[in-house]
Image (cartoon, rainbow, N blue to C red; front, top):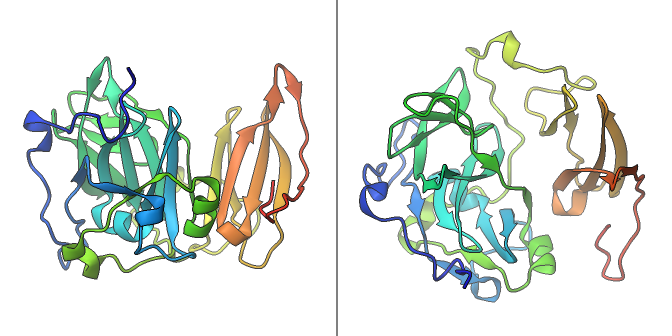
Length: 284
């Protein structure tokens, strides 16, 4: 029998040791990482507003939304979805949200936020103290150096669009005692690039973009490119790309403030896409 996210076992034993402070410090340190937190169904999520941004993920037929206004404070959620564990992370400085599979060689690991390295967000696993990139899921130092977690596809989009897609999904429940910290409801285009970041970290960007511009980064076919996200008021679009020999489709939905990239080859056949419209007005 497949476990649902609500019947999955909570993180136990030493996995919950060493939690970060329960409140953010003046130096910008994160709040406490969450472990198998309470979630409610979307219709019971009374605190969400239509324009709020969510980090949404689905696995094994179950879906859950993690509001950015909560993730910006906690940064890390050790959870279960569709049975297996998942690791949900968000870094408000770079506006990057990621969901990883924290099971390595059959063993689940629990994580918390760690201090940045060269301006890049980091994680630390509680079992070994190894340090991991919050962008790639790769372990950079410690006993697990060289290991890499699998990336689980996810989207950042508005609550209104998420509800339209998954009306009965789970939603991370707000902790009333921490509501004062849950203030940033929308991603601000103020990505701060620390001066310590070496030039080798930076990739070529298409066109002249401002340092605080929000982008989608693509890494495929041995090539990397950063493309600017659409702004509110733009029309939905479908863009057919090729990076190296890899054929990609880039779909943008400005009304939902989201964009996603997919491989556009099916059974070896490359496809090309254009925008159509559903009856409810949501772009396809």
